[in-house]
View 1 (cartoon, rainbow, N blue to C red):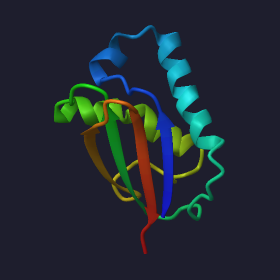
View 2 (view 1 turned 135 degrees about the vertical axis):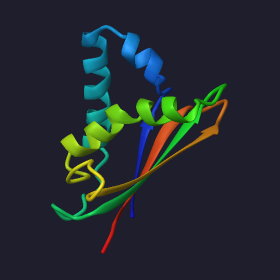
View 3 (view 1 turned 90 degrees about the vertical axis):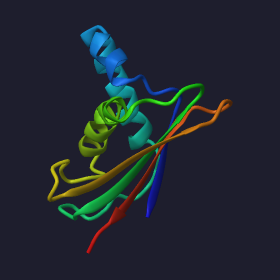
View 4 (view 1 turned 30 degrees about the horizontal axis):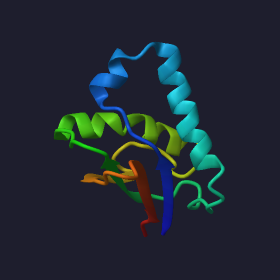
Length: 115
């Protein structure tokens, strides 16, 4: 199992959709950079994976559709950096959760290769 962490607050889907396209692009590149420099080994190319994304927010929780939508740039960054082969249903079993951590907002990603 691989565990990755992206520090900082994750903007909601509504905030992301309202962002300037340049800022949204920088946010996606920052996420990919954090994943690329993690030093973790990647699953075998073409392997089906299970990913659990836990979003730790500082103050309030997202509703379910906002939570999954907010994770789209993370899933794209996982694909771009080679941690997952594809984000379609035959290749990725995705579970998104959330919790509160008032002192340390972050996103934790656990990836496990499935047989």
